[in-house]
Length: 279
Image (cartoon, rainbow, N blue to C red; front, side, top):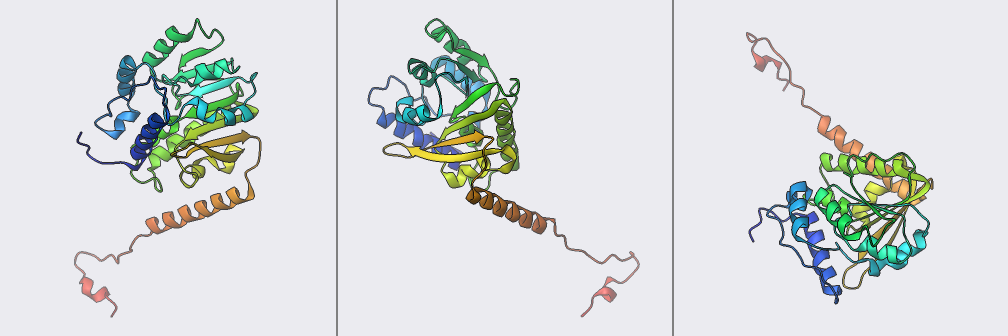
């Protein structure tokens, strides 16, 4: 299949998917054909179409691979919000482990309807709601835990340089994180499961404006996947604060350089501009 370009973000997700499928010996999931353009991963119509044909798929790795980490961070009584649930089996598997109070959200009405029809009778205390992560409408301090697996990666999949993402994407990620912070309870946790390594992802998460600490772990056999826990109301580490200050200073220097303009001498049209040149 011809591709116009090979984006780094896309490669992350593709490699992660391929390794996840290799590690899942008992899979019943089918790997769907890739879209023609990486930007399709940000297009709701792509997901609606895909979910109309696909029964189940888990990005990166399935629940079994990291449930030992989740069980350390989530209590069975917690009220849990899952962002970009898709047709993943994760929430169903969590339910079997005693996590009953789960709200599954996705911006695709197709997958929400499919999952609701499939699961509502088997898992009566779980719910499925159409919700865009860029515009969440929950009341402040509603959830003990917000969990996402690969959803934020989809927002960045079109980026060609993970070291320098576009201003548009950076603002979108910041918007989502602000909303997550708002819907979390005072001591709530945001858990992010991703293929993004710390030097790419922590600059987004480890910021003083979010008023949370950041802890990272990893799991996986052939490939490492990363598990980040943001604890609301806790302080960033000294090292994280230092790195954020360094990033802020670097951005300021770059902006100042971009703002520099060459000042030219102005002359009247009838004035010989050569007279203004100082040799």
